[in-house]
Image (cartoon, rainbow, N blue to C red; front, side):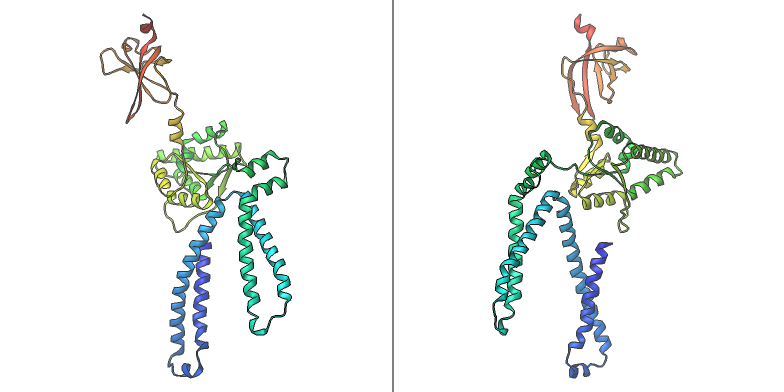
Length: 359
């Protein structure tokens, strides 16, 4: 909406200037034109095209500035604002005596030029000094606060906001992660994600309906348990069709992390420089690592490919091939890890029954 407003302002302004510029043409020239209104319309149309180009440029510059401001820590914005104000104040104090000096009328333009030059120069110096000595300034405000000192040194960083994807909500593991306290910061659920969950819950397909209702139930429980951390945002993008594209755009605009377990969405978001937290990657990373000699309890479920082999599975789905384990089929047995193999299909562990190792 704001983008359209900026572009519209430029189009109307430049088109209006083009329409009114005809009045600046000498009257004798206007008298030679047979259809003055048509000329006004043509000039206004060219002005609208120029305004569109300028508006798009201004809109792009605004979005870049907004993204830059959003990515800056609040302490940096605060110190730069103070430095900018002090620079303007110093510029005006230095120019005040000069403005009192008598200047001939033909050189009257020098005063506003000096004012603009001094304001720009001292504003730049003020911001530069704020970047250099801003941390010291924050320490002076509250020297007794450890938090202030850590913020001033750049050690303490605020927790990044996370945007929840539909698949991540339905998956349900994010609820458990919130309960453990390992995931910090605000969790934002955009309105279009909530609408997608509702569409799934109302679908005629039984499987989709179950998934949608599960996602809504999980979201309701998280809101009840963490009312200050789960936020529903009403932002939507009418010009974007897919929910995945909307999620990436939303995460870019608020400088947030995208929390998902969708592999394709993770790759697309990474290509567009959006930080992604993939729950599946987290689950893969926290799998226990078993080294040769480690002991574990395992239920042998089926025979292996070799005559004496038995196969069982860990809680995370990792296959364990037990040599001499076929005789323990259907039983829980203590096994000792002999080796581990990482394949394209996942990790595989080889083990032997502890009783045979002792024997």
